[in-house]
Length: 257
Image (cartoon, rainbow, N blue to C red; front, top):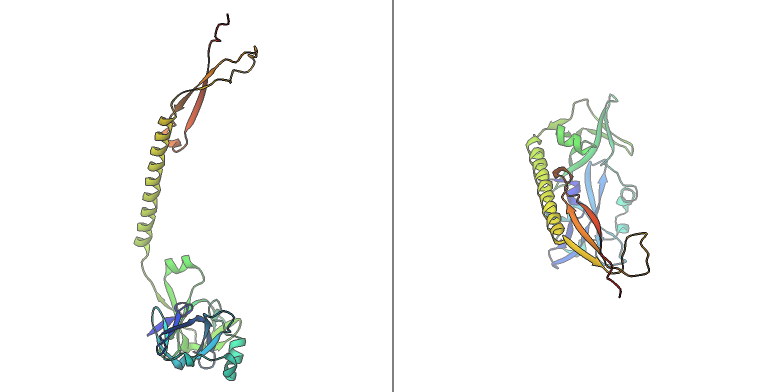
């Protein structure tokens, strides 16, 4: 079974003997000479404890939801594996690295890499640094056994063969997704229009403010002032915007005897 590196990172780690969660996968240790994952770095769930290492051959099983070890004793300190310290301290980064062949032809960047879940041996490199390109053109793969050099800046391949391409027609899925999005927006717009209409209906009618009078009419007497609030419906294209007019109506001052 082939497994992607992104599916390994973050997997919870359990021991079968103790039935205990030990932590989760933090990193992968790659040996460029063996073209394989030789160890897995485990982040321990206990606070202030250093990361532990488990050699890949001690992994009991890798599933879609967890990585299983036979026993918690298989987790050890990094110092217990001196032959791996160089690889741990100066890790090989595959994802994001450039790929070219021996003729100097650039083939792209590594988007993902895959390994055999039983042996840890690298199987394929997936190329493509842009999601849209991956979506429209499909996925490109290079067999890992073609790798000549694992460099810090570039990965060199043995021959000039073009990447194997797997294409899939995403047009119908994209079209369906866009139609669903537009339908949701249309429904939300109708809901907003209805809510504004109800709100405007509730605000119709006169409101009286006893101490308010038009500007310039200061006779020293308090005359009640009525404000009639009328809602003017907006045009269909302006929804959900609504416009409100306030009309001042002067009340006659009460006669003073």
